[in-house]
Structures are given as C-alpha cells and as structure tokens.
Length: 168
Image (cartoon, rainbow, N blue to C red; front, top):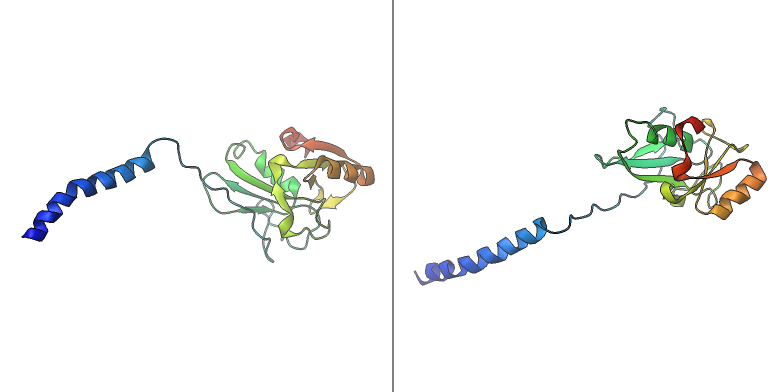
C-alpha cells in the first residue's frame, strides 16, 4: 500500500517532466535535417539519366539527393547531372548536389574523395576535354583552378547558378 501511495505522489512530477520533454521537441525552431554526403562510385553503378555504367568513364561526375528521398542519384557526367537538375519537374526538388573537383582529381578517373558541393563550384563549359557523354562541364573548387583549366583546354567559366538548360 505504501509503495502505491508513493507512485501516486510521483505521477504529477513524472507527468510534468515528460510533458516538458515532449513540448521542447515540438515547439520553437524546426529541427534541421542533416546534410547527406556524397557516396563512393561503385563498380556497376549506372547513370540515373542515361543508364550508362559510370566507373569506366572519364571526366567529372555528379551525385544528388532530392528532398523526398535519402537515395543518392548518380550521374556519369556533369552534363547529365545538369540535364536532370534543370528539368522543370526536378528544379525545386533537389537538396544536395555534388561534383568532382577536377583541380584535385585526375580527368581519366576522378577520385571519390574529391566530391565538392556543386553550388559553390566553378564550371568550365566549351573546353576541348570530353567527359562520359562528349562535351561536359568541368567542375572546380576554386575560380583559379577553373581559369587555369581554361588556359590549357579553352572554354568559359561559369558559376552554378549561371548554368542554363540551353547551354548543355
């Protein structure tokens, strides 16, 4: 009996504690979703847009996540990546976008550890270097690296937000 009486006295305190914890999680600022990171390109991975095998193709590649899925979409070239990204159906559905930093990675076989956020990258369009699908957008982590590439292979430097579908 005495134990039951003690439980009844603890209930209001316990209820207040639980209520406070629940309210703290519900109110105020929305909790931010953690950023999803690029993943390694595996042998046998296919391009989300064209279906080509990615691992044997030269030039920068891309990956992205849409807002409604935790499944990464991989692309054999930055050209295919932008073709998907700039499609009106998907334009506002993409959350994270990654490309290889070709200033830090070999053109023939870009390294998985050289992925960078595409929105902060510099792109070269119109160079003489071909990627998986022929002409591609060479991607760089710095403006200096992009201009150095232009001196060797031609082309014009653009920012992420300046790329339009008709340029592809």
